[in-house]
Image 1: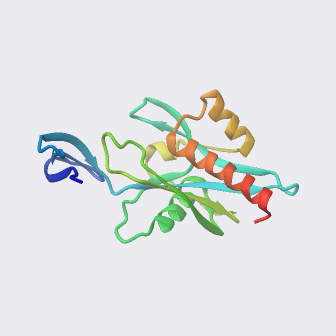
Image 2: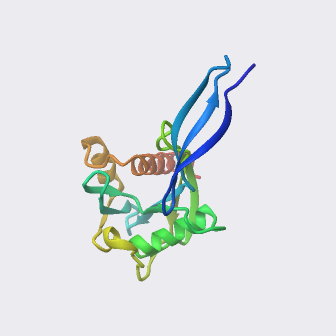
Image 3: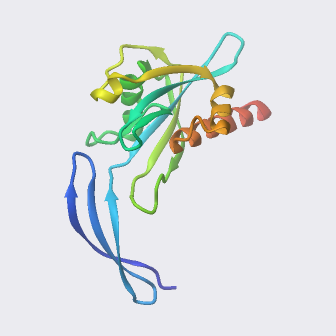
Length: 190
């Protein structure tokens, strides 16, 4: 079976974290074609899960201004993999402290999400953080300085997905994966 071939990239723009390239490919039939691609180191997102005395699950989210959309979005804490040599779990722990002021006791990998395959090679690794304890946050940049923390029941977060109040892809995927994991653990006892 023949496959697509990547022939090379022409750099168009270098940013702080990303670069934009025109990538050249060849189709299985031999037809050449080009695509604009944002090359990215990827990102990490964390669902901070907290249980109350009755065992009810809650999550900590952030409401943050996002310039590309010119509005606030509700998201799980997240950030770019912009520190060389840092593992995804380490990035997640760092971002959780920076944005939410929480240190994770345990970090469990939930899934890797491909957020926009038509325009970037970015992968977002999503983790579940449990055993969280409050620490001083270390917010970076004007958007984080102005962000608001939301501590709400997991069920309320899921309802906000249904209502469209939460539409950020990593947050939708992270909350749904967390709910599915909790349901599976409850049904199997594991």
